Length: 214
Image (cartoon, rainbow, N blue to C red; front, top):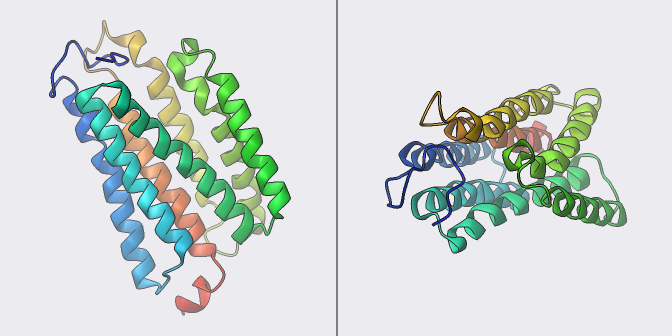
């Protein structure tokens, strides 16, 4: 059993009920983006990939907080990493029009920096791992604000939401004395909103989306 969060006090499938059930926020986000893509008549493989990864995040994290084993931890971490890479690549290629070489360099930089931050699991309750993703999102958010054709503040809102979710993830184990359920479930809820905003920013600014919405 892997015990990383305030809510888990022992073994058992229902040891983290809030941490498990709040992963439904990702499933809701995936469904809403899918419905919006259908309404806009957008069926690009990029959007389908993001929707699939959002759903995979919810399922993987839900399994991890239910079973708390090594193999479910992999199912928890891998979809999150793949979503970060997919968003980096899709937004960079489709919206910013970056070259393949530039995108490969950014992916490598993200992976190396994330691996480095992973060497400090006790710093910020392990949240340092997400610092590279935060920096990436902030950079894309500034570009989006000044250059996006539609809903230019979406990624700035996403960055703010990410800050809040990181805060709640970081303080979880430190406040067990005051609130036994912890705050990790809020990390899930805010991140469900985060991935929705990120995917919507891509959806609304893909080439051809504006024409489909007229």
